[in-house]
Length: 214
Image (cartoon, rainbow, N blue to C red; front, top):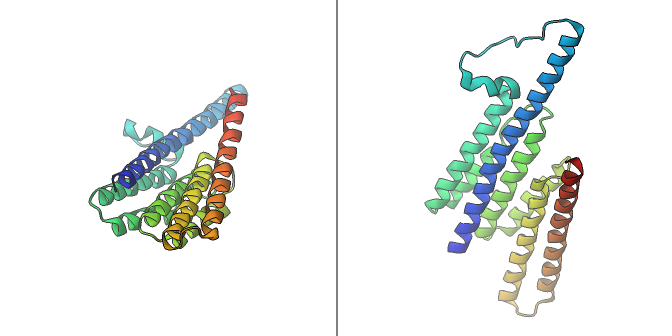
């Protein structure tokens, strides 16, 4: 049980870190766009356009750049992650599952790439929780949904393949326990390796692209 809790803690920590990175990434993108717009206006001798609504609190400056709808969605996802962590610490797994499912129902701005990342991160954690409760078929469906709906390769998609591998391993263990030497268990282990290989290949491509962009 200690190992399971440690796994959840790592997953939650990565999820919280990922949400912070997504917010910073959205801010950086918005800031670059604002700089380009300002530069273009300066060249044409026109004043840079000002937002229709100005927030007086300096702490809200980031919200102006990112867009409050995206910022709120990211903040809500982080809140549900924290709730799930508390429920898991208390051993209330059904409540933890419910909290993570709420992330999947959050509304994001149309076309926001952060939406796929946040949802895939939530699906990975949800699948891990389901695995711990022996709900392997539901965990597999959760991962499959994320993979089918993903629009691009990312760390979060690679992580879904990693969790998919863990599901195959759990199935193999269950088959071994009920019938040692079961050929189906060997098949599940081979499927696990294929899933891990998918994850490795995606991460390698992402890493290569990052190195090329430097």
